[in-house]
Image 1 (tube, helix red, strand yellow):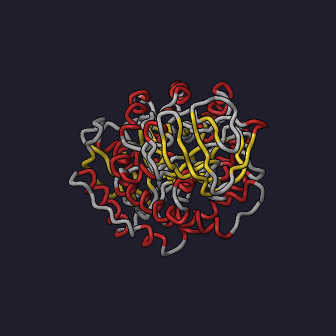
Image 2 (cartoon, helix red, strand yellow; image 1 turned 180 degrees about the vertical axis):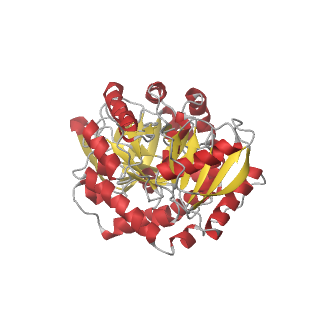
Image 3 (cartoon, one colour; image 1 turned 45 degrees about the vertical axis):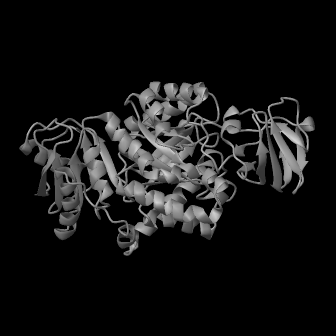
Length: 487
């Protein structure tokens, strides 16, 4: 028997990363009950085999709680690293000369191997090379096909295989490594709902992933390279969702540039109707502490005020000491911000202009009518999910109940703002649509006797992309009599 959980009153979604602290079926279920709406599996860590049980545990929630589950597989992407050093480490002195070359001999304080041909092909004098998450900074003085000579602008200790960032040039490298292709095939075979692509620099980076996915999952672009900002609208157009990956973005750019960029990425994504996730270090101190800093709480609240679809926990829920408390805190912040009377006005600083289509016009009208007639919910019938995305883009003041015959669509909508998706049989007629809307609103606790709801659908039914009906319905309260089916 399913243990029904009422739809979240909170409209912003919570995406929780799973890892060593949170990969048992019991912990996954606890995080879900506490407020996690979707789960991220980081393909950078662990082997594929170990992730099968985690995916099965997430899917088991569907039978137990009667609600679609949402899984995002996050690909590692191309990681740039320096080679190895004599004794495993060295110290670079500020002001000294340091050479990166193709010689695999262990390095020292004057040189090290750089095993990445694409950097030698693209680097230019004056460009910065950032080592170990930006702790060390090198400036390119000159280069040849076999070595890059730099001046150390910020020195420090450097050990084997530390990461390297090249923020000032677009590297001619594929966004998918061999490991990524293998992980992508695995994730698609396992039926995950979203694939996140790391280090996207240009829209072309998304094309290969899109082809390999073959429509079996939605594609999310992680914005973490300065080059991506220059072609942001094209990238957003080419993907199904966007993640503001502030970790690497904050390495490659001065930290003070990240907040305005975050707002811009959220604004562009919302305007173009793509779900947008704000991620990285949101409640970082809760990795080791049961409570966050006030600044972290404010950071999460800002993302909610900006109208992000989802806010993400990384190490806090994957490897921290307080995974459940981290989800509970994020939930509490979301609920608190959305209860602020100013929340709606702040969120609508982003002006949404509907496209000249019937579906967009109806989505905008649904928001206005819901406020005018004090409707308690908007209900939409959709096969592909596009109607739901159009309505959510308007950020209406009431929740959105999405009824879809596609289980894949219901699962993908777990990252969409204000949406409660239900996998259910399709309707056959206008009368069937109205009756089913009333039953589902009552069954899922979104309406009671006397309430009004707004219904959107497309006629003829079973025709994707044909949204052309908006209907205001009053709930009588006895619609469930004689109806025992849950679908």
